Length: 192
Image (cartoon, rainbow, N blue to C red; front, side):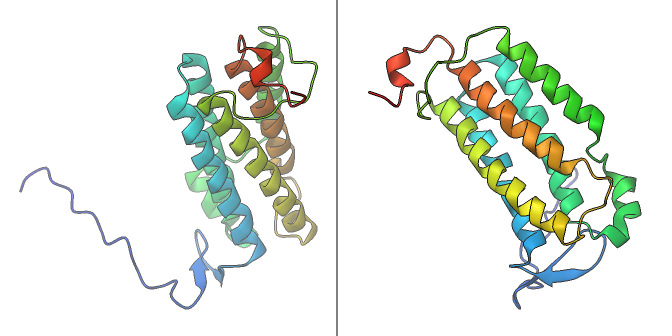
């Protein structure tokens, strides 16, 4: 049939022995700290998808979609051995300090449109904010895993991944509160 794309098989059997391939070369165990780190980034991207699917706010949806794309690149960088970094650069744009600055500017911009609640917030006032908060907590776990990778020398010395993940986690807290702006405080307050 003309115009029909035949999907390759999803399974390859290459991982049946408990190993997985890194991007652009090399194999590691599936429980390797590197796999934990980029797998956790993938979890955060999926949780953001939940938030995006429930949000009715165009701005929130656009922010989440950009974050998902950027975090996909973070995962790809984490899935690339430092010895193959040049190959990574042929296909992806790495996180840089400019992206960290953009996240800070976005946090400031969002905070101009609402006031943070003066109490600890229980996630779950809306399905959209719950998904965003889930992504935030998963990303904080990813951050801890990336710190371990960094300490082991598995990330380039000039990498901006750690500050970026840290700032995106802050953004997700603000974005969830932005999503819930105007919600009755009784639905947000953990002191009820």
